[in-house]
Length: 125
Image (cartoon, rainbow, N blue to C red; front, top):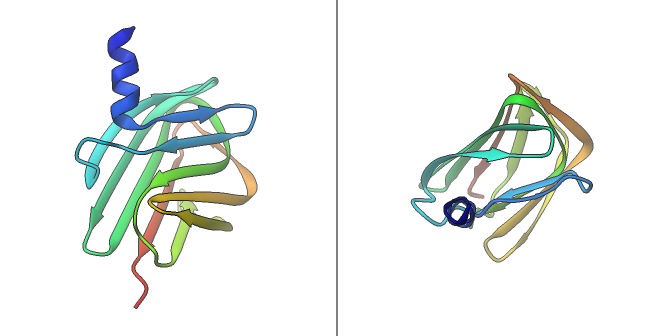
């Protein structure tokens, strides 16, 4: 179990089921990372790629479901942000405090097995 705690720390994983909040702040190779996560009612993967002013984050549930109202990410991107689930645009707002970006969805989303949440950011021009 101690090694699992280390894994969570390296992934920067945070989860609060009742608040429908999940977060990731990878500490090892944050520009190109993929890791697994577990939540109360499901599990899946988190992937992040960052390059030259653009970022892409994917959260995919492989089993069960994860209800989300908010997701926190560690990024320095200051540009516009878009979110979609399986190609359908999701309304969201975001606030940035230093390198922590908090994305709040207008409506809670049901990210169930087989679905993928994709968020993209672009530097403002």
